[in-house]
Amino acid sequence: MSYQITINGKTETKEKKASLLSLLNEEERKEKRYIAAKVNNRVRELEYEVYYDAEIEFLDCSSIEAMKIYEASLRYVVAMAFHNLYPDLKIRFAYNVSRSISIHLLNPKASANTNMLIQIRHEIQRLIDEDLPLVRMVVPNEEAEKIYQERDYQDKMAILKYRPEKTVHFYRCGDYMNYMYSHLVPSTGYLTKWKLLLYAPGFMLQYPRAECKGEIPEFEDAPTFMRTLKESHDWAKIISADTVSKINEKIQQADPVEFINLCEARHNRMLCELGQLIEDDIDDVRIIFIAGPSSSGKTTFANRLRIELLSRGISPIRISIDDYYLEKSKVPLGEDGAPDLENIAALDIAEFNEDMVALISGEEVNLPRFDFNIGHQVFGRKVRLGKNQPIIVEGIHALNDSLTPSIPKSDKFKIFISPQAQINLDDHNPVSLTDLRLLRRLVRDKKFRGAPAEETLSMWPSVRAGEFKWIYAHQEGADYVFNSYLPYELPIIKKYAMELLTAVDKDSPYFLTAQRLIRMLKFFVELDDTWVPSNSLMREFIGGSCYKDV
Image (cartoon, rainbow, N blue to C red; front, side, top):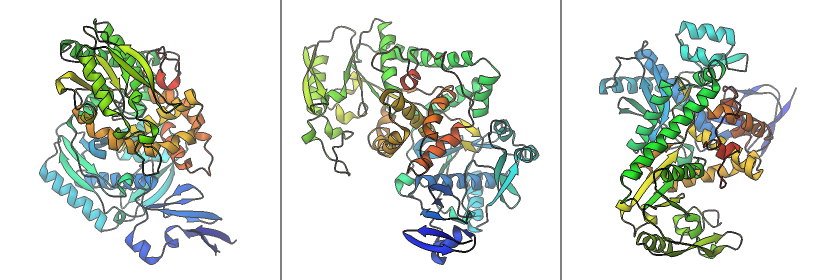
């Protein structure tokens, strides 16, 4: 039976099944430019066979979905290289600093060193140079369990019981087998771009990024961020919540109410620690700046910090940077020709500094309020600081010293807030914390603005671009990093997010992203939010907060 395929607007009729790879010309196959393809708006691996009417778009390194396949394939080859050279050594991948993947050596006496680095690099390159095929195999869950047992993949066995499907899609390369929760490239020769660095106590793996047009970004160390990730992972191991299967066990086999309160207790402890730092330096701390990427829980955090400080006899006032926007006609334009409200040049920096210096000096100030309906400032409120009364300023540019050139560094206390964790489906497959923030935002936008998932998903790329441009460059200058991640949150978010994501139409340009998030969420068991405290950061996204401005 004949069928029609359309590629780049050109339609042709086919009589037999055809792999996507065979639809490329000889030069395209040779250069291995394309990683995967969209077939009727579904991501397919290049070995996939088409036998029906289809719209086909081949995806290269500029595609987020293609690069996720590239990254999963690279993790597969790196895991294979370690297996070949050190068959008894267990490793664990985790998303880490500088958009890289850390490789942890799990054996107690194993240590990363230059000799191991050289050997692993050589083996990875050998596997790539030989262009070995990665053969997809579909096996029943029962057979997958036997494969895991034979290879001592205890981590993969633990998550298998939470898999809703009845089959597992393994990939075989010679005698090596692994499951990466993803499509993979057809062969190892596609993985020409990678870097492996020695980064104590393990290694750091760099890979191409779609936002960098398929290039590997320059490695930038971030010791503060790295330390926070380590602390978060260490704590998760202590409470047995560092993998999805362990989190599920906390909910199903232990006491979910205790689990919620345990996670909240850590936030309480961090707030207490932060309050003590500010109290100890209250004679010098005049302005407390709070910044972090989208959906980090900044608003609830600022409220809780204020309460913590009040309990110590410190009475802060809150000021919004948004009230210092320039009139719309004076705001710089973005690449799309629209006013770029995320640009620091969209703020009246001179007026902001003048007001802050006056307040610090003990003067009374008429603070502005920006009226977004009319597009300019109006009269706000009169404020004069008293004793032990610092200012809390929250906003995207809060940690950027370009915002406050007139204020001495000694007067500033900078706080970076973001959910930061290293949780895994299994040792070779980490969970993206960027996706966690996206899920938070999806649920919040629906709860408080009635926004469908597609609306939030459409804005996310520009939100991420703004984070890289205006936030992450300044996180290392923070005096304190508040980790807003709650290990119980994805099981709670699941019941809100799944309904939104499954409603995304299969023809939508955001269908692929929605499906990716569904594939991640499906492994979590649901958790009822009844026992989530009203002052929890979680309430900022699911509703029921005790704070009026959430």
